[in-house]
Image (cartoon, rainbow, N blue to C red; front, top):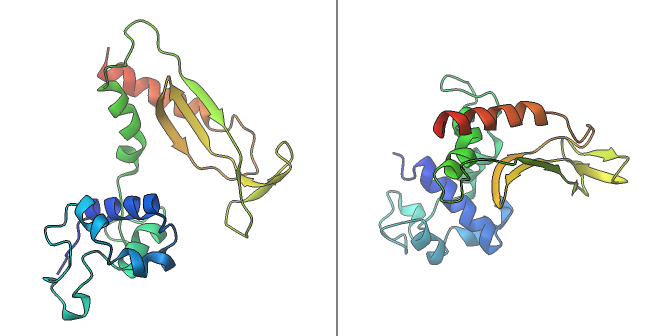
Length: 183
């Protein structure tokens, strides 16, 4: 029996990170936090009515369940052998742009898209972390695209690439979405 929707799990994970339970190994404490349960819309923030007795007193999903959000292979689908929790990549990619097109900020004559990259320093052996000569450190090199204060793209990229890599493709997708929603 499923007790948590993907929406609830995502919200729980987001609130966990906001209050300082960044790593899943910290989540033993996070799964019993009634504040996160209330923020996540749980009807019973104390967890006394859980389906399984072993979960009584824990209103939120445990770290093993949340781990499925974090470690699902990128190309997993509904029929994938190692399917955990999958999402629609195109919907996720266009989310920020769709929110932007619904905002009151949207200018009607000129839209300036501002691509930017920055170094996200790494101090371990994480996959995708490389030494970047410009930043003189091991890092990821995420790509951000803004319009004013609105974030339209947040793409995590390995640290061994040029700052402009992938920006033209992202700008084309964002432009297409804006024009199709606000001709």
